[in-house]
Length: 308
Image 1 (cartoon, helix red, strand yellow):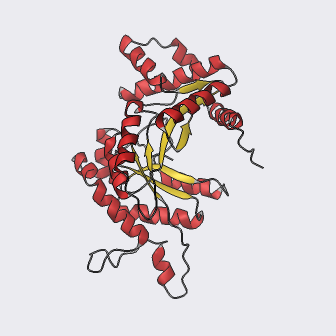
Image 2 (cartoon, one colour):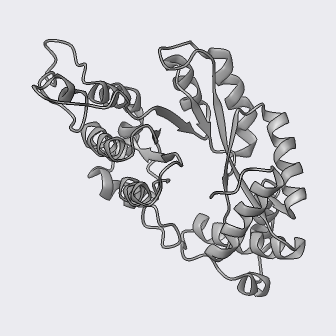
Image 3 (cartoon, rainbow, N blue to C red):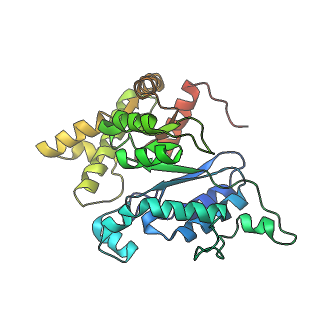
């Protein structure tokens, strides 16, 4: 679950809330933030929220972190109670260290936060009669440029790259991550995931129609007019300007779409070109039934087991 704000077409302003809902309705699937925008929050709050999620779904929660605001400048200022937004982004490495300390409950003696504990968390295991899961949410760093790639490498953390909206930077960022990777207690070798926009349909033409609608939604978002994902009929009737058409062409060139076989071929090719260890697929279309069908088709194309 990503974190975005002031976007009517994206239901992800509160990742922890939605993850709690998903935890209550699932038993096996991994749940994660993709990601929580750390500069928008106090590290202690994130440690408490995800410690709670871990307690509700032990061993199934991943904490992905980003440093962008996940919204426009005015909304970011409202979130952070400051118009000096760059300061939050610049402090990201320090905020990350603080969050990790809270999750591990290991601030050193003499630190002003030494007596502060994120609960649920490790402190419960040291309390009389207390029991605490040995797990804590694994940390991932997310990014769309080289900053988080280098930081993830330095800290020996897994790295997730936003290929779905920054495709031109994917290979350089992954190269930077792998070249600078330092083994850590949590990861011996670099591990990279990329987010991929992919939509499979039973009919190739329907895939093109849905992808056009999703692209129109991005045009509106990028021009300060965020809203709900339009219908394919609305997108087909829309008169794109030359500049908008250029954006559409560029955007859709990185959306893998078509029949299940076409999408599988595109995903396989992308994995080979990037060397990604994992692909995280997002399907942007008008209507949940279209998205669900897309995931079913892609799963079947790879022979994934059908849930009982």
